Image (cartoon, rainbow, N blue to C red):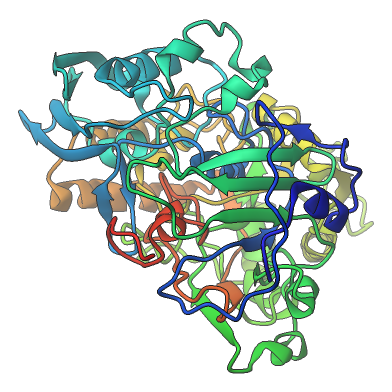
Length: 557
């Protein structure tokens, strides 16, 4: 495979040469060259082709979900970043905390420039956090900015963050996740969601966005050869829209593809890739489809016995077997994934038990008073649960949920919607029960506070609406300020015991992550520990694209 011109790329993805939003100030082309021999891994990679799909305009405020964050991160940098082992210097070369985490100081790199040639300064860092704190559109992938009381420049190369009390997940949720933006551009922007001019895409990062098509999800990036670490190892990244990633990988249209995580694939689909030219990565899942009960709607959703009955009636182990072909783990109602080091395995698992489900419903007053096989409310009135779900991939799962609940006497009406409607409905609370989905389950456990504390101000679609438990709120507040990891872990473990008892949400399963790549193109892929930034469970870490290796900041050329 050799780098294509922009025209050739558009032809590959089936678009006219004028059909893309061009994100550069002037057209850029790369002259076609003869296909070279397969490069050795130690040499720079001309192009990597990834499976495309639209996740929004890749600015720090307009991207959509975790995959959108990854697309944005190619252009914009953070103070610290992760490689395959943990945190590494990025825009900051050193950092330290004092006063038990109440103050953090960062030493900034010298000679960093924005992609328009302007110098990066401490003022840009200070502006970024002040501006981001003021934006209601800020993604939930950047968390905790409200706890910063002051950001100040101690000298030209040092910035200090001040908190009123310690904030334990600072590196994960703030320093390692917040994209730094240039003050000289963004200080003029009042509505970041509408800022879609080429200037909006001028970061300090290793890549420049050349073109983007919302309709097809095609993105085209080229290396920023003036990047502060040096000329990136991977020179070009093409996100190509394809109907089936594994078929596209077989055909050579893309160089890496993941196994579907919503429905799974049988062994015979994987068999063609069990050859020396392919590498297969596998890791425990940190993403899930999950049932959300809107407890703010009142009965029956605010009835803990009703929710526990769902947990017993839905055979999640059977779903792993039938939908994922065994590649995954059944869900446990503690929010975090089993692979997360903070996960508590000593909680109620709610293994399938139809008799327990029926007993709980009977004791709560949900009885079949007219003998039609469907239970009525305790007041004798009939009810049918409207269940919304994403129609793109979750039809079979929703049907299994409906059928399993039917055996317990609960009538469910399926209401398929598109992803945008799903996200809007679950964010606004316009639903009764929803099967939604999200990652970040391998990240810092403070996400439990954001999603389940009644004091949380989160507007995320992962928020458990109407849930309140005073003891949980107390523990959530304590762990936030506990920098002693052993003490914090004890608090987090108890939080999960409470969630498992209350079942405000019911994770269905955690699909095992599997990704297949063509070794001759690139063979240093890895899953970032606990996710990229604040928990995005993906392999597209810009560190490996920049350096060509799994650790550090030294670039292979």
